[in-house]
Image 1 (cartoon, one colour):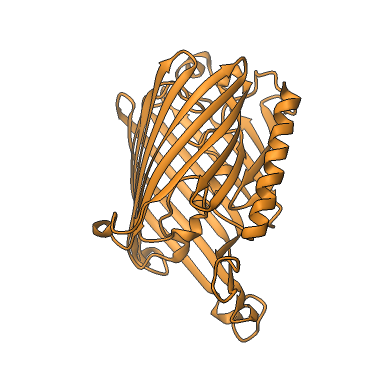
Image 2 (cartoon, helix red, strand yellow):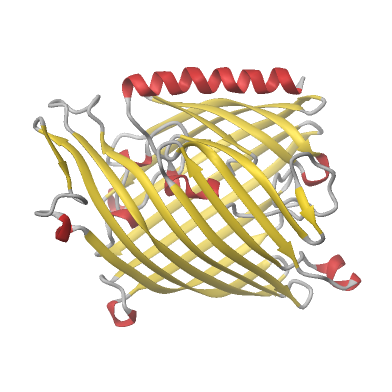
Length: 389
């Protein structure tokens, strides 16, 4: 059954990739695919019997295949050292961990980074800090869709340092602060009116490369009652994120960023789970293009929907159909605009699709995920070991 499942994945990947190559040189999704490289949650696999896991004491490393319409097809290698715990700490909170992540994909996007996660006082305090270097190759204008055959490629590279400290103030509620330091360089290349250009290598335009810093301080509010961090069957998660970037603390421009996300999970029957998600994003001030809002749905290029506000909602029905094999169906709708007041003035962006799941690790509810999504004339394939939400 596993071999049959992987064969289906390979065939799907081939046909979708071939179709996209004929119509579009590349596509992208919300977060530009970085969320597949730096996952939201890393399960403790020290005591699990799984293949392809390298382990020595409290250090483990695992390879993770990735197919994403933004960054292409590639491999993520994630390693983690789990710090020792007392029996009481093991029963009341996750293990603190130091993680290293490296990734490379076939469109020459790559990233590497270090992540530190700490938990104290029966999970009363949570600390997460990330230091990473990311280099992405994206497409803003595709020659297959432009009337004059113009092509505009968008290269973003730079460093990210982000730290969060939260304290529980009520059951399942956390409040805290964050600091984010970004030093980015973006360049453009392609062909306009039949003439090729490359900003990064042209001596006349190289100095005009957009090098910018986005340094900000902010507020975090979180609620989490889910019964699993990797694949919930019930519960809710709420997140509010406010970040104020200011020239007074070294940012190139002053702007504000606000993000809201809510997820809901309900087990309709023993093998059937309904999942819902809504997301909102707003930027005010002089936000750089690479920090604009995207529409967080599947099946289309996020670089086609960059703006200063966005909203999306999606639902997913997850059915564990037979033994370790599962099926999912999903659909969503999204909007973007220059301001919150204008949301809904433009046509909606619709997304729908089907997916396959194979349970790799029952105890952690970790699935091998394959999703095929469509949105208008676009389509995309996703492969990961994490659920979409």
